[in-house]
Length: 310
Image (cartoon, rainbow, N blue to C red):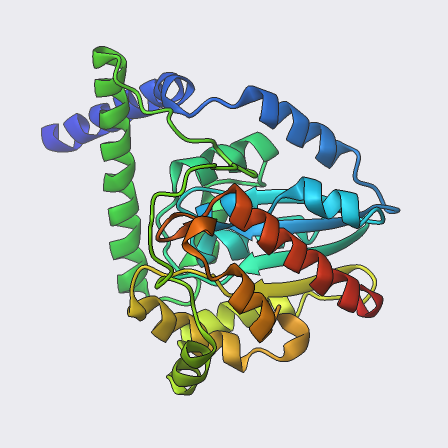
């Protein structure tokens, strides 16, 4: 009984201090946060909005200014977040699908990782995701058996405890990492990777297309596809241009190839040739400002060619 009471006391202690820790350790970007909330508040039944959901690759690749200047009938919002995976992207997509007006959700294809990055947790709270984080846990583990759910719930709990401990250490030491932006377009002007071998090629798309499709990920993708309503909600998947390892291609390309053309941006050979330059990379896995210009211009071309069907 004493052991149980001791555990309860520790849990209550961490819960009580959680608010203080999060207020002090969450990365601050209040100007962008206020701008984002203002943009979302203006969305109504007459709005036409392009939402981009993904990881830091989306953060650094999609320049909303280029799209807004070239596509006056649309408002572009970049929701790229450092560390996001397909799990967060699809959960976020369900939330945005309920927004009023006409919407196109561009979703980056990545691994499906249930662990929530700090940026996603913060954004979910800023935007007021209903019943968060429990709604996210329910979404993530819905297709797993009881044993798996229990194991993942236990892991989530200890991950949460560890984050709170790290936050407390940061408060004491003053060493809190706030070096990255929470979400949205983040241009980088450096070019620190002297090669272009990390860009996908036409041959990659052909070779890996014959691989096995991850059925669990495919089920999740089908869930968001089924929410589409012509003239109200459209979903488009984006294949990352750069990769760290061939394992990513083996997972992503079979899914990308299985998707019908109407549900993905298919890169043509000219686009792949134009963007495949080291000067367009910040590092192996991210485009820099110049690369983002090429990527965003490619998006404009794709959208103009397809928007009549949305």
